[in-house]
Length: 87
Image (cartoon, rainbow, N blue to C red; front, side, top):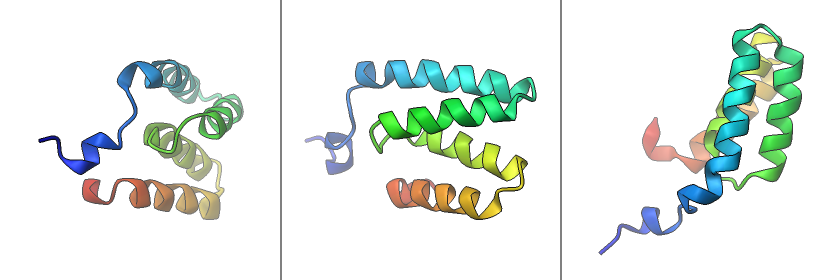
């Protein structure tokens, strides 16, 4: 039997486009292009399933680096709600 949590996960091939775009945003973060990364990550978060938590984590980190602490906290909390066992 498959654990219930696994049954709720989207197929990895469905997540691939979001993973590729998230990596592009990470590259922008590494280059110090935080505004561009934030714009890209906001689009990914808006379009991706809730289970694509990495885009939310990176958007939170980007907001934090830009001094948007309340928004960063909100994003981090949303990830904790999605992945409570990963804390």
